[in-house]
Image (cartoon, rainbow, N blue to C red):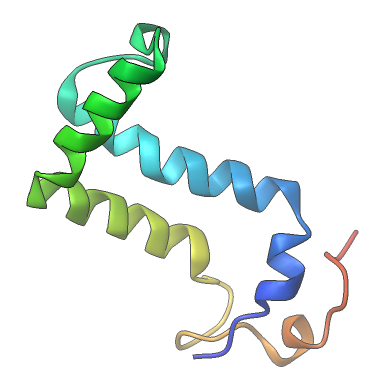
Length: 91
């Protein structure tokens, strides 16, 4: 499995996708919204609950998988063209 991590880390959209992939299943499962996260202490409690729940962890892993996997190629790798990028493609 070859993924062009260097280029993904240069793209701010990738970071947003990862954050959403992590927090969406956690918040949905626990029945809270982002506006309920009013302190760092509460956020820590929410993350601790998520880590201690295998089902939530599997949801997070599945979401991260769909964020990282390139559905436009067969298999698990980026395309040859994408592997040769030095910067995110602007097209």
